[in-house]
Length: 100
Image 1 (cartoon, helix red, strand yellow):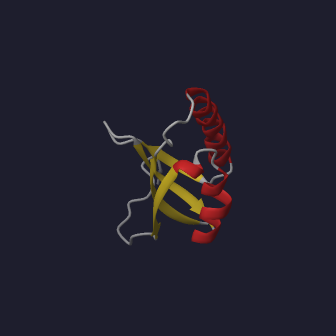
Image 2 (cartoon, rainbow, N blue to C red):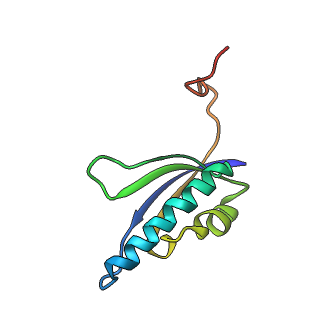
């Protein structure tokens, strides 16, 4: 699987009820855990003071990422994703928890 840096800004449509927002956010948390268990969501951060997320996501290609990964998120209709495909850097030290 390839890795992608995905920056997501979520904008709740005006007039959406608090109950609908809460329902979708709860479902989003469940789906994120499922995608993490599948190896599709590797890491996820929220920049301090911002209402967006930055994550490392995995898929076979960008089409699969949009259709079968991000497209399955309950908040997806409200999301604006910016996707950057990644490839290994020759100087990458590897995972921080790797042991020789």
